[in-house]
Amino acid sequence: MADYAVAIRFPDHSTTYEALSKISNAASGFELRSAGIVERDKDGYLHVSEGSDVDAGVGFAGGSLIGMLVGVLGGPIGMLLGWGAGAATGALFDADRMDKGDEAISQFGQLVPPGGNAILAETVETTTEPLDTFVASMGGTVARRPLDEVVAELEAQEVAAEEAARAARKAMRAQKKQQRKEKAQERLDALKAKFHKD
Image (tube, rainbow, N blue to C red):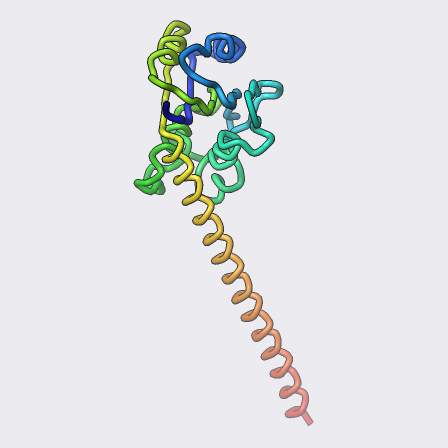
């Protein structure tokens, strides 16, 4: 058995919702740990659809891997790293900014274009055939990545976000220090000017 992070896309929103309601009952040959529908708005932000979580354990809101993936794909970390809004091609993020190690996150992000939706799920599968057959029967496509690859990418993104935040704080401190130095010099120059007038 193998653990996977799975993104499933259908041609229209209603089929996605129908598939999510049926996926729990169709789960023979695979275990569904957590699943929910994500939608990308026209500005590129990813949101979990209300009431769409059909978890078998911990759901999106409870800190599941899929919940973390949603956060990276469409949340503040994703935006900090240049993903989401403003992507000229409508993809998740600018391919020039993507590290080669971010293949799973890229694959899932590109699956959900602005105005589109998809099911994100965490599965345990002996073979990929049962889920693939179910999705194909409803006209959908499956993107699947080993869970350990996705976890490694999420960890790398967390490190990158922390480093970016640290660099931003350092730059802000340097800017404030320079501003204080310039103001102190202005005050000193003003005092010198007063004494030289006499």
